[in-house]
Image (cartoon, rainbow, N blue to C red; front, side, top):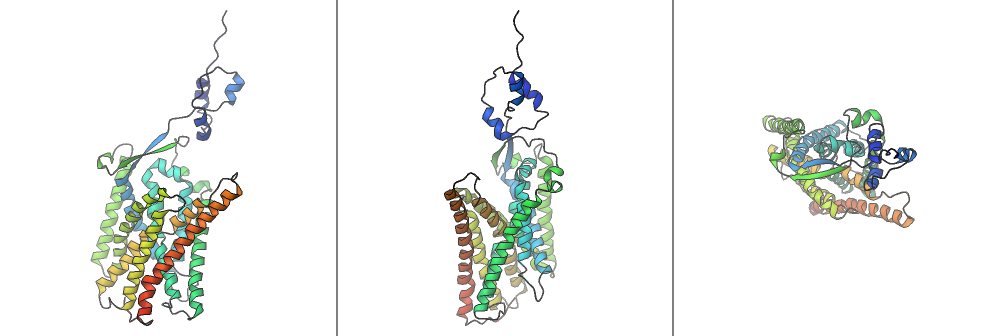
Length: 396
């Protein structure tokens, strides 16, 4: 009488999948194993099979819409925090507060990257590239330190100017880095995890991004129809509101113009970020965005202080909006600090030489970013200052 056939591994796995969550790191390594009869003990100890990956569409039009709405909110929060902490005497530079808050949000959002991408990919760019990138600003931080070093802020003079500017640089960078770390720690709290708000049933599957380019025909399709409609409504409504504020009022005209121009800087930074994968240990895209924004903000600051726009209400408002909106959104310190953490990361089993190399690359990238920004401010902002024999006629 023939012996009864033993159940195969696949049948055992199919019964266990509902009880034990899959581990993609182990399932992928066993996906090619043949269906060999095993004993009952071996069946219980075997790893679950691999599951098909989760394909996530990456539509650039949806991403751009998310960047518009998030940039408007980021500019409003940044200007609000700066205004809230602008008083005399202030213990630290007001730009430190939005930079710290933005870095905290960046650290928290980056810790849940996979969950945001699975729920709706533009949500990931909404939080990081859009909100955090617009809430924090590299150019305002650098120019604030440069103005103190050059004596434009009424500093005591002499070597004290240099020390005061250096304090802004060191404290600003330290607070931003600590903000990233704090955000990562907050991400460990279950109530602050996106999974507490939205149950993700595909958390055991690998992610594969499917680029869709700028194809508008792929928008508003199930199951993304609801999210795409909300995304479009927020972008259009945000632009209409800030345009009405900028053109219809005089009190908040500069703020409204800043929120209206801000998304342009975010979109430029987003496209420059495509250069980052070319050199992962030295993100050229972020570096160029910060340098370009710092140069433009230094030029607008010099024009406002020199008196070239004195008496022109619209001129002062537009120049101020370019600095606070476009340059503030084009440059970012939250992405810079997150990149420093990423570049300096190494595996626990790495050799000492590998660890030193990773940390050294982070210091080189951070040093080039800060020193390069200060040199740009020195040339663009300090040049006219010394050319006028250290005298400003006043302006906006």
